[in-house]
Amino acid sequence: MNILSYKSNSDEAMRRLRSLYERRASDRIFALFRVPSATLKKFKEDNPEVNCDYPDPTTRIAFWDNLLQERMHLEDDSIPNAYLTEFDQGLYGGILSGEVWFMSDPESGWISSMVPPLLKDWGEFDSLKIDPSHSWYRTYLHQLEMFVERSRGKFGISHLILINPLNLAFELVGATMTYISMIENPEMLRKTIALAFDLNMLVQNCFFEKGTLVNGGTCSNMVEWIPGRIISESVDPFHMTSVDDFEKWGREPLERMFSQFDGGVLHIHGNGRHLLGAVSKLRGLKAIYLGDDRGFPLAFDILDELRKRVSDVPLVVEVNYSHFAKSLSQHRLCGGVLYKVNGTPDVETANKCMEEVCAYRGY
Image: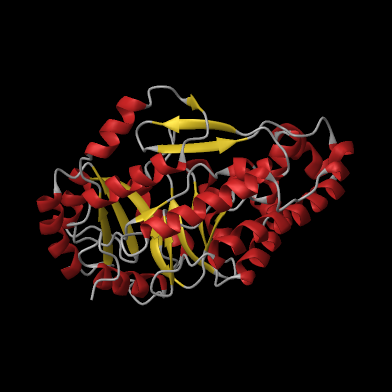
């Protein structure tokens, strides 16, 4: 019996993904195919401006419902799930009474958020207070409950990105002062780490308490679906620092967060790949999403090299359909990887390609 009505092969897809994230499929490949979307086309037409207001949650759940329903007949390894993109970093700063700014990305359909620095300097830190009755926390709670209710039986709700302690410091005093404080004011960073832990626990516990698990696993915009209560972490602030800085300021807070749940997944941008060897050894790490950024080689193009740095940690990469299909036919795809294939012509093409994916054995 299918678990989600917007996924014709949800049982099989979750079985396959379980084998990937339990590290029992190092010689197999996995694939999500992105096909043309009328819903995304309409979103782009209706949202030409980057800056925007907090959107109506009813409109957003309708967007996700339409988008995921379009993918109903794909027989790939995707699991339909909606991501509450509005509650990006802005949620955490908003709970601390920051001014939340919203931004629209017409290509992806996302509306994300951030806040400008809350404090003039570290001297105002003690004025900060986590208040579960704050309007932004109540807004998050309302939208989450609405999404859970209206998605039930059709699609899942993705976990939300946590706020890395240094990202929270960015929101408090700005990036420049944060990096200076790593040397000149480490005590304030230690206080920020403690504050970030409490904020993250408030937001993430709420997420899981609202019945968001699907078949005992967590839906994910990063890794699709993964067994257990899994969080989505970030090491973005360390992309512009050394590995030593990550070891000093990043490892312990991440491992502490992972230990509160059943582990976590990470994303790494193009300018953070020097961290791969270090982050791959994080206790509780389940998978790494490898992002692509301007000025750096595509992760897919150097995947053999990146794979060597992370041992058997499951990876997720983006790739164009033509490149993926060519590498598939030439048997040149690394195993233990979920490939997110962009620009796939149509559902029929994706499903035919998926037959080869399921039969493939990599290296």
